[in-house]
Length: 347
Ligand code: NAD
Ligand code: TYD
Image (tube, rainbow, N blue to C red; front, side, top):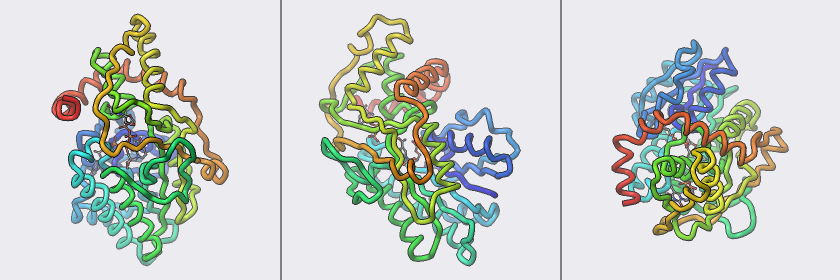
């Protein structure tokens, strides 16, 4: 089987590529990535020479290129992760999110449909989405697969739109698909613009920790390798036209998570207890900031037997250790464009 993974040089994608390349030597895994600021081939150094792995640099919004790629490789399965993925960037440049997340997804859907329209048997388009499409929860309740879409940020609106197109291709053209909506991921190789790696990097460099608003926002955190395992499972066992929510059963208020992170960082860096916490600074809130995300992952648990394998404390420990022993990786990704992004976002 030849499968296409889009966005495989990014954070989650690189863990999915590694898992599939190593677990299925009989599959040919093609990783297509435009290598934007968020894509980094360093993430896949350890597997780049495997005979069942091919990297292709290219943009999912380039229709001619994508059509030719599908004709050349005849992908039987697609796992689509490529996206613009950061809410703060979507607030500054929403159109970039429409281009990649909506139009890019459409171009992939068309290429896949045109290739297999007369024989969809044993083919699958797997679209990776987010819990953010459901909007925000109040203090209670969980997102289930039947929660209505109610996106609040340009990022989540673009992901919601792409989810709808995937469903529409299933209904209209009979294209086999699955969609998963996952909660916040954390772990190694995450670009330091998202909360956890940003704060790890700032603590290492004794920089302020910018907490949006009062810090009483809640997210449900999942270790990235557990997400990759779920993706493998859904790709092989998920039912056609189904959606599965994936989450960590692990809700944290931002400020509590940040305090735990500070404590662990003080220990790891042998700094005086409380030194990292002193870097916390409350800054202007994110516009349209969703109060709370929390996933009911009982469907994927009951139907496919998936559950997270590590506790948050274990996962966070491993994550911090990885960043501390990969300072070159951090230094590379935080040079160049990162500096001007940081300046614009945080002043
Ligand atoms: P990421 O930003 O780390 O990686 C995205 C990858 O896509 C990068 O390698 C980038 O180079 C590539 N890419 C971007 N635009 C492209 C284009 N036009 N053509 C080809 N490649 C392009 O993102 P991530 O955090 O790994 O997220 C991956 C997917 O998972 C996204 O679809 C995201 O919406 C979804 N998701 C992420 C999270 C999370 O917490 N990170 C949670 C749920 C769902
Ligand atoms: P983030 O990692 O950007 O993920 P998402 O917005 O997709 O949930 O942010 C996680 C939470 O942390 C969110 O409530 C916003 C907050 N946050 C801060 O308080 N400060 C920051 O500098 C960042 C990047 C996020």
